[in-house]
Amino acid sequence: MNQDSELIIFIITGIVLLILISFFIIYFIYNYQEKQAQYKRDKENLQSQFQQESLRTQLEIQEQTLKTISQEIHDNIGQVLSLAKLNLNTMDIAQQEELKGKIIDSKLLVSKAIQDLRDLSKSMNTDHIEAMGLIRAIEYEMEMIRKTGFSAELNVEGKIIRLEPQKELILFRIIQETINNIIKHAEADKIEVAVNYSDTEIKLKIKDNGKGCDLTPLNENDNSGFGLGIRNMHNRAKLIGADFKMSSSIGNGTEVCLTVPLNNHNL
Image 1 (cartoon, rainbow, N blue to C red):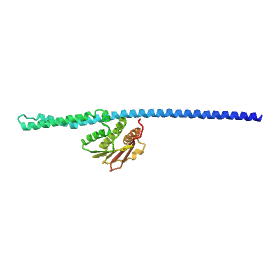
Image 2 (image 1 turned 180 degrees about the vertical axis):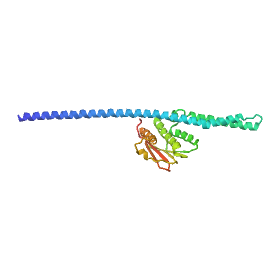
Image 3 (image 1 turned 90 degrees about the vertical axis):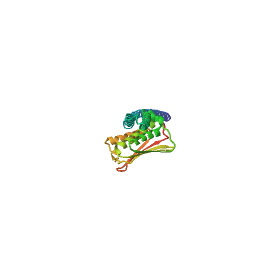
Image 4 (image 1 turned 45 degrees about the horizontal axis):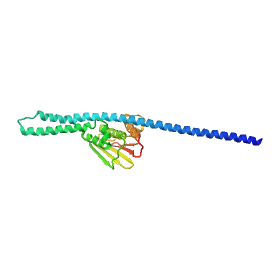
């Protein structure tokens, strides 16, 4: 009888252990599948956010480009054509030597206006960033800034490496927004952009010689416009796997640093 009892206990114990093992296996499989499903959902959400941010960036760059074009036409091309018109209106056939000089000047002015219009046409669509690449897009931006009276320098070190078009677009918008903030608020007259390429990362720095600012509000939960703009740039950088840092102090200008690892998987 004892042997039968022991056998029954052994069988029951075995069945319980088997049930427990089966339960843990099922739980493990369920948990694994749930994590896989969550990972897939997170990845899809990240891709969706990336695409939305890319579209928003395109629209913002397009809006900024149209503003720049409007200002350029008004301030430069319009002025050049006005000078050409003035030359034409003051031409006197009787004054042959003076007439010859005004014709030459008018040709030069019209040629300059045509070239300026060609340059502007390159920036009518955000696709020009993909076609030119990040560095050429920054160079073009700096050329436009110089026309407003700023000292603008771009220094590039290392072998240029192209990123995915959407990443370059978002990077360019962060740089463009930083420069626009400098022009509007920093009271600076000099902007320096440095791009360093290495085997593992791309490092971009935007620096000005303006009045600087106090970054303390960034650590406060007040969602001020100042803090919100910087947080938006930080979130954009994070979305493409880049590190965003900003340093500034009163009277010492501001520096923004973007570090983009080159070993990230494409989104």
